[in-house]
Length: 500
Image: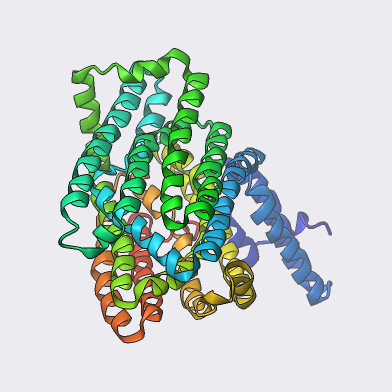
């Protein structure tokens, strides 16, 4: 009897197969049906084939479905291109941390982290974070081939962030000049703060560029930009750090951002030619209308981002006040292990987002199917990565950062499960834009702020920098619980289980 012939028998297994196929994507029904009927045939042979052989055959079929049929070659190609860029970006960023930790020591590295946190805290209200809203609007307008409206959107996105950069410059440097009498750290770190703030101004201006590349799906150019940016922001900054310590690092960031801005202009001219120059010719009526559309799509994300990043930067400043620069350095090194999970999740999220927007609007069953693939595959990958990092941490920390950072090992262990779970749900932010439920970002970030800051103050006062790790983990678990509720509210369980 052949495997496929066994599928005709109306056994419980075949009934289960019918339900599974009914809940699958229509576009994938035929290939999926063939393999699942084959699986049913295998189950029918359990009377004549030994049990271990049945298990082996089922395992092969399931692995084939999960990792061959479920990942199209186009997806592999595009995700690979993005991953190369992320490898250089995250890899260079991680090497930067390794060198900075060794060159500056825990005390100097902690001081640099706090300088950056202070500047980022001031820049948050002026970082409009239009990227997700812009990509969504670009995809909608690209579908209609409305080139004039696309140009208006690009102009408005760039103009809005330039205004934000100007506002940040004005506010920060006023505080930098007149705030030293109220906060001694402003006076002690004044030059370093000023240099890094200037680099942040240029960084804010170039933020919309990656949104445009993502919308046009120019993943190769996005990868080139990520690699070039890493070379200047990470490797060049390390060279300047060797020369001038913390102050040299801040100067390195500024010089790097100048060269990155020049590179972005060249890339834009290569892709869009003279259209790039038209970004600087502003028509105020279309500008006003498009900025309003961006505001309507991004306002919740803006407030949410201020709360979320505000919690992150305030935590470092609070920790510095309680335990000093060295404690901030030890905690920050443990926090960098999250980069491993971000490196794995980020390329997948970038690739999926424009496709999820399209499928939600036109192919709803395909949307659920894609979402299930993401959670099945990324869930398994995150668990495996957490186990490997947990075993390797006692060896990695002294090898990479020196024995001075050995106290960071327990902090990594405390936060690893939270890193794995939270990065699995890193797609949450993009999903709120896909289904136009950006208000959920406010609830997510409010949880971080309301739970995270009091937990940090209390636990750090009791446990020093170990308390910061526990506060971070507790906050992440609270956020993930809300994200699960969000997915259930809008999709029921179809994001992990096919419909009956």
